Every structure is written in structure tokens, then in C-alpha cells.
Length: 360
Image 1 (cartoon, rainbow, N blue to C red):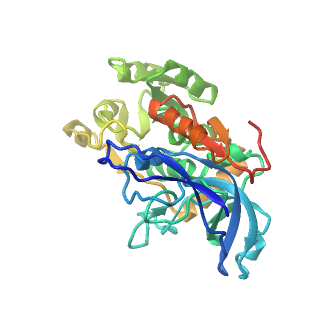
Image 2: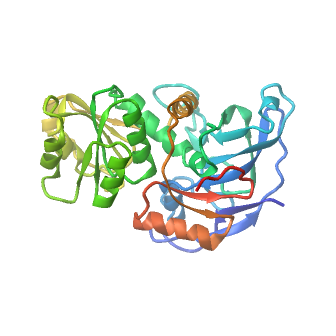
């Protein structure tokens, strides 16, 4: 029987509990006509997985394999003409369902169902094999290792929509600020922006992370914990363009207050998360300067395909902070510890026995 990692129920209130991991067995998947069975090579963590363990994520449940990011080999398919061509191909998995191509948001009345650890989607990637509609697969870019490919789907999709679709400034020569560099989404925004010819600047609480971002193409960065960091950032901007065109933010907090002082009139703040605070002030100063704040969450199936193609064409490589091998609870717990401590720079990955292409 195939194995998987899920959370085990214990007593505790949301936000106070920390559900332990447990290894479970899952049924051998049988594909329907339009489905494919994937032997998984690697899977990657997202912050939502930590929130699930703390019961801070909607629909948290038990017995459903964790994680939404995955890469693997199609080992068998259903009988349909849409499924059969995927046999033996190396694929990355679209991390959710219910959102085809609408610019506004998921078309499905129940919304976007992300894989891993909740009641809304029975599939997760932290397991030996999974079955998925063949329409949710993309052929994996050849230049990516298993670890890099597993690091791509959810963070890449979230970054693509936040930067490419919502910021309105994926244009060469524009000044873009990416906050909280070191997380998977922020790093993918950095890679997308640099590849598109933007001047990308970053913030972090850690100078080492800023230095690493500069090596990846950032123009510079500032430590957001320091007083008047926004003034220091303005000093880094080009003389001919002393303002930001857009901010792509995953923290929330005081980003409108600080950011509106740096943005051009009509500038955009594209927010995909609020790790600092679940609420923030929208100030009259921002109103008077026509600043727009746009929420951005994950992305559509169409955007996923566009993102993977861009990664393929530009030969981009997601940043992997660290990986462990196997469905080993103790090892996987160390990755969660990295996330809790915010010590990672890039994605945290679990490689699995189905892997054939590793570079790390």
C-alpha cells in the first residue's frame, strides 16, 4: 500500500495547537477515464501547511495527505484521449482546482480547492502516488531538478498572479519592491521581475537574505526593522526614476503607510498575504495619491500554464533552501521548524523514491 504524511488530531484550540505528523497508508489509486496516476518525485512546503498544523487554515482536516506542490512521473492513465498522452511524462501538478481562466477569481461556486490537508480537496503531494485529472498537469521544464520543480507550482502561481496580473507593472525598467525576501513567493516574484527587465528591490529583517537576493538580480534592499527604512530605499532608486511603480507584498502591516510615500501617483500595492497582521490601515494620503491596493490569491489554470511556460523559456530556477528525503516524520518536522523560525531562504522540499532527477 502507498504511504502518505498527514496530521494527527490532538486536543487544542486553533492557534494554540500544533498537530503532529503521522505516516498513513492510502489506497492504490485507480484512474478514471480522464485521470492520471503520478508517482511523486518531490513535494514542497508552503506557509499554509504550517497554518494547517496550527488549525489556522480553513477546512483543516485529518487523514488527507499534506502539501500542494509536487512533481512526478505519470505511471498510468485512464482510457481517454486526453489522458493517455501523459503516460511516462515528467509533470508538475496544478496545485488546485475550480479556477479555469477568469481574471476575477475562481469560477466554481465553492471557490479554489487547494491540494493538501483540508476537506476541500482529497489530494495532497506528500505521498508516494496520487491521482489527478490529466487536465491539471503541465510537462515539467527539462532544466529543473526534482527539488526545483517541486518548489515551483503554488509559489510560482501565486507570484505570477501577484506580479504579472495584479501589479500592472511587469514592464522592463519599472521599479518594483518585493517585501519579505526569503520566502518562496517573494523569491519567485524577484526571479520573474528580473527576467522581465524590472529593477527589483527587496526588504528583509536579515542582511544576509538581502545579499543573497542581490546575487539573484535584485538592485538592492533594506532591513524593514530599521527606522525610516523607506527613506533608505528611496536613496537606492535610480536618479531618473525616484519612485516605485509597484509593491508586491506578503506581510501587510504598515505597507500602505510606508509604501505610499515611495509609490508614484496611481501606484499599485499587490498583496498576496498578511504575515505581520491580518488587517492594515488604508490612509487618506494613499487615497489622495490614487494608490491602489489589490488582493491576490493563487491563480487560475490558465495562469499556471503561462507561468510554467515563462519558467521554461527563461530557464528560471526556483530557490530551494533545503531538502530531506523520504516520508520520514522526524526529517519532515525539521523543515517545519525552519519555517516556524523563518530561517529558510527559498523552498523546503521533501524528495521521494519516485525521483529520477536530482541536482542538489
